[in-house]
Amino acid sequence: MNAPGRAFRGLVSARPVVIPDVNVAPMPMLAPPGVILNGHAVDGFRGLEHASYPDVLSHRLKLGLLVPATNTSMEHELWGLIMGNRGPGRLQGVGLHATAVSTPAPRFANAAELEQYKAQFLGNLRVAVEQALLAQPQLLVMGMSLEHIIHGLGGIEHTMNQVRAMTDVPWAAWHEAAAAALNCLGARRIGLLTPFDRTGNDNAARLFTDLGYEVVASVGFSCAHAVHIAHVPEWAKEKAVLELLATPAHALDAVVQCGTNMPLAALAERLEPIVGIPILGINAVMLWHALREAGIDAPLHGAGQLAREF
Image (cartoon, rainbow, N blue to C red):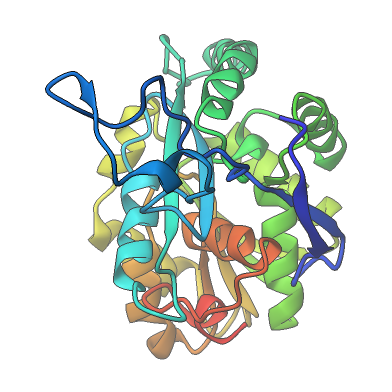
């Protein structure tokens, strides 16, 4: 993109962040002869062609979201949070623009299928990023639990470094967002809730261990198909949190949920007062992190303590 931008330090990471300016004049650019009536130029709109007007609906921040093509939950959940937090001084003017990463064989019932799924996602990611950049986003969100398909923090960081090299637009990634969230909360002992099988759960536990947290317990729903992750019912997630994770014996500091196709924001909001510890749903945490890194510090209601208080 190579556009001028607004430089500052991320509110959570304190790292240098440059949010591209995508409203360089003339914006909108008009084809000759400008505004027309019945095919003929009309007066009264002369200033339009020399000014710089922002995106009407995404004038504050334009987010680009990369999700697997099978994901029916993340965009829906993020839009729900954005629309539920509209209004002056909140998220008015924040827009979300999703691009699907093709995964035509979305099964992972065994190790071979998981490896094939990994190859599909990573192999088709570049094309999806190129498509996402056509909308001129100011910050990109990796809407994928990379720990599902990549073992260990080193491999995830290597993949994200390759992705980041494709563009000068900043990225928000789950491994960084999760660490920032847990550090804000002062949490060390965590329980994991995932839609993954044993391999995916082990990968998720490895990521958080590499990040320096103690994974006390992990629950995985062993979904064998990417689409089916969105079909895990609320009662099953609630039962897993209340009976298998947030128990007195585990003495957790937080519950952390992986898998962007498994919505959790509303359940986290409802269960946190019951269990007495934060419940971090990946989608809400990713939105929180993206907003904070873009300099937006408005409280985010409807997604638990973290987004509301930090």
